[in-house]
Image (tube, rainbow, N blue to C red; front, side, top):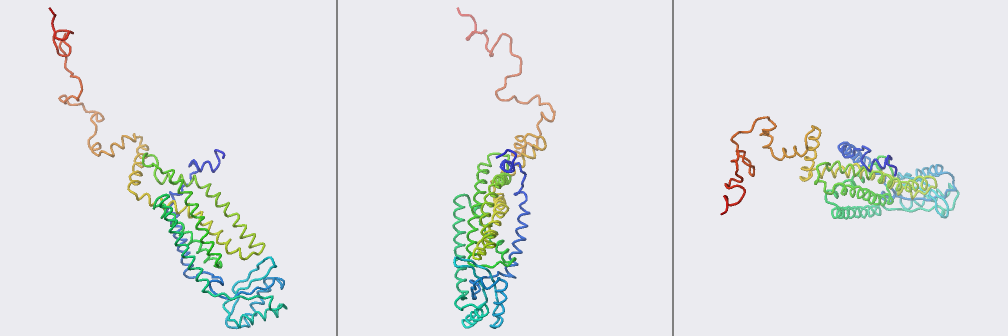
Length: 397
C-alpha cells in the first residue's frame, strides 16, 4: 500500500474525513428519511405479491408471442370474466423445459379460473393443459410473515447478547439502532418505488441483517482498540479516537461492500434482467438495496450514536474536559501541567505567587525546614563546639 494513497491516509487519520463531528447532520438526514419512509408505508403501503395478497397465477408458453402481446390478451380475458378481476404482474420466467410467461391476477373463484384458462387456450391456439393455473391463499403469506417476524426478534435478541458480551451495552444499543434504521429505510424504498414484496423479499431482509452486523462489528472492534486505556492520557477525546477508527476501517468497509454488491448486482441485473430469471429479481433487489443501506447506517449512524452514548458516561466526560483544558492551555502558550494544577486547586488562582508578583519576602519569615542558619558562625569553632577540630576539646595530657 503506497504511503500517499487514500487507504494509507485514511488509516493514519490524515484524510480529514470528519464523520463523528457531523453527527447532527447524519441524525437529521436519517430522521427526515425515516419520516418519509414511515409516511410512505402508512399511506401507500406495499405492493404485496400473490403469496401475501392472495390471487391466481397462470403460466403461458413464451412461444405465443411477446410479453406485451400476452399481457394484452390476458387483460382482455379477465375483463370479459367479470367480477373485477385484473392483471397484477407479468414476467418472463425461464427453466430447463423452456421459457414461459407468468401472469399473476387478483383473487378468482375456481369457476372463473377454469373459464380464464379455457379462453386463453382458445385465443393462443393451445391445448388447455399447456396453460397451468394455481391459486394461492393469503393465509400462507400471513404464516410466512409471522415466522419472519419471530426470526427477526430472535436475531436481534441474540445479536444484542453477543455484542454486550463481546463489547458493552452501549455498542449493542448502537448496533441494534443501525439495524432497525436499515430495515426501515429499505422498507421505505420498497414502498416508495413500488417493488413487489414476496417471500424472497422477506428472506432477503433477514439476510441483510447479518451483513449489516458484520460491518458494525468490524468498525466497533477498531473503536475498542483505539479507545482502550484512553483515559490514561489527555491528548485525544473519545470522539476523536472513534473518528480515527472510522477512517481506518472505511477502506475495508468500502472493499467489503463492493465485493458483496458485485455478485448481487450480477444476480439482479444479469440474471433477472438479461436472462429473465424472474424468481431471482425479488431476492437480488432486496439484497442490493439492503447492503447499500447497511454500509451507510453502520458508518454514519452506529458509530455516531455510540459516541453520543459514551459522552454521557461520567468517566468519559471528565476525560474530555481534561483534553479540552490541555488543548486550551497549548493554544494560549501555557504549560499544560501548570494549567492542570491550577484547575485542580482553585486556591492557586485566588492567591498569586509572590515571586511572580515581584514583592519581596518578609524579613521575619520563618526559615524553611532543613535550611541552614543565615547568621555568622563564631571564628575558630565548627559545629558550635569549642576546642578545635578534636572531639572533646582541648589538649590531652
